[in-house]
Picture 1 (cartoon, one colour):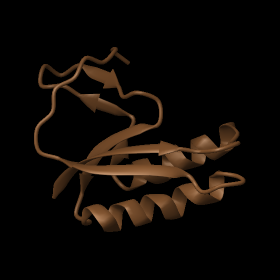
Picture 2 (cartoon, rainbow, N blue to C red):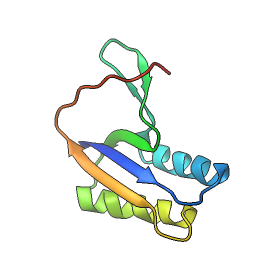
Picture 3 (cartoon, rainbow, N blue to C red):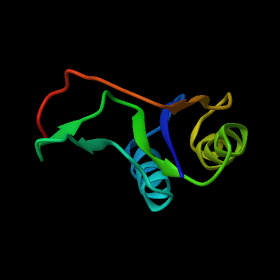
Picture 4 (cartoon, rainbow, N blue to C red):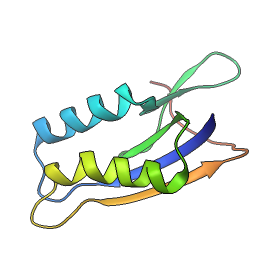
Length: 94
C-alpha cells in the first residue's frame, strides 16, 4: 500500500459536514493526526489527512471528491492527493 497526503477544502460547510467527512476519511485510513517515529502524536494542518491506501492516486482523489462534494456548497470541494515517498515535518503535538 502507498502513503498519501490528502488536502480537502469544503465550501459553506458546517460542523456536522466536517465531522462526517472526518469519519468517512478515517474509515478509509486517512487521518488528521500522525504518529512520529518517537511515538508522539501530532496534528496535521486543518483539512489535511495522511494515511495508506491500496487505491491509485486518481482513484483515491475520485473517492475523496465523492465523499467530500455532498458537504460542500455551492461548489464542489477542492481536493488534492499526493503519493508520498518520504516526508519531514514540524507539527504541533495533539
